[in-house]
Image (cartoon, rainbow, N blue to C red):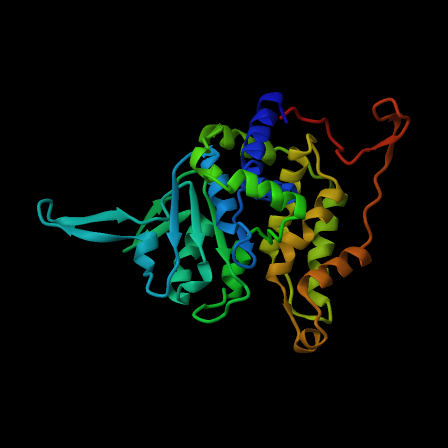
Length: 338
């Protein structure tokens, strides 16, 4: 990745980390999903900063942002828009809904009815909205950041498999460490840092970053590794539903984005391994016996990672950084400058 683009990523990362204390891995995953042209599901207990993370990421980029508070009475037209009869023109006029933004924050997405949740399916996959037979393109870049509380089940509608499959990754913020929580009291004790958060990157810079990620090289052994990992979820005895081909594509894109964030022009098996749980676990359905045994999808993915052979990289004769260690020769083509 070029120096200018790397500087943009660092500015966004530092901006978000200034609001979310002590969670650099969560911030990195959020940036990975953004650059991989995916959507992010933030799932955790109340009060750990799910919505704040979504808002910090959105406000750090100078682009259009809309927030949707999902409630049981929310209608699909509130999200997608509606055609209204114009008396003067004597024709229908389309009024865009909240989905027509570059970053859409869906707060407590599982509180809306399944009919309203389904309004997001087309926009998240095809980046367009179809109303009354007419299709309307969504702006670019486009990212949905949704939050949900997995503990409180009263008045909620669990996301169906098709909806979860649209999200590239699921992340749990988790409780902060004692030191981070103490620092949070100093930073957030007075005025919320979100109020003073200013954009540090423009939408066109994010588009350049996305284009750079598309050019990251993935060698055939790494591609095969991705396919083997996803394929193993479809035959695992503890799962009644494995990951879809869309999951394979999402894992590959996320690995390329992770490589770019690490300053590499090619992806490694390490990138795939680091993202496998976040990208695959929320798409899997354990069997009834596995649930009785308290086996989680995350544990199954970790087991698959342990069992699946990692492709061995041929070593180049030259050392790395003068330390005499071989460099993995995964990029089997001339490296491209990003």
